Length: 231
Image 1 (cartoon, one colour):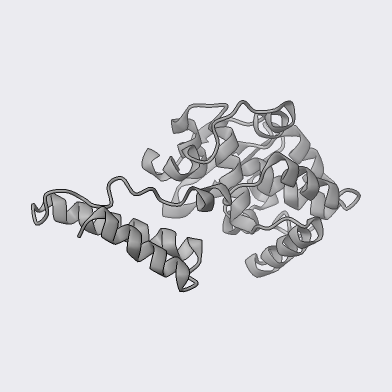
Image 2: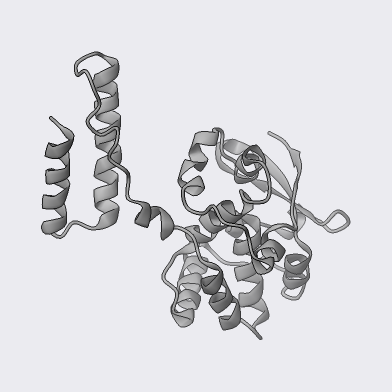
């Protein structure tokens, strides 16, 4: 099997209506398979070595500055939606972590929040000033900050994005946070903040953006830091 064979295969998939995300998944799987075969000396050279994974797919995983402005404009005047959107934009939390975020985990003196992520590891992170003010405006007697289930919050976010005429989903806010934050701090800091165990897990974000951040993006993504890690 040569590179030409594989490129012809991918062209046929496109011609048969396969989506770019599906095509990207096939490429990743084939790259791993041929890499293993090369390591076992079954083949001399990995034919997938110089075939790039779709950059378009990587790009669509984070919001542009213009899209973030549209989203923010859409929720203006609604305290709950403003707090919800800001929480996703400025924390880098997974939707499950946002849902579990509780008032009992907030240290109002230090303005930090402790969250239990994947692998049963706690992360204690700073709450940016703009976000802190926003969540205080919606404080209630409910134990969690937003008082909703994952399904409910996901539905609310999709409705907001639809009104803003921006294509995306909840996890795109996490990808957006990672993409822009890596322009401001070392990769290892971002890795810790996201709860990842390996720097290689950030590869998809490093390919997405390599420009100087505007003042608008700096204001959104610079007001945070790792304060403590626990288990």
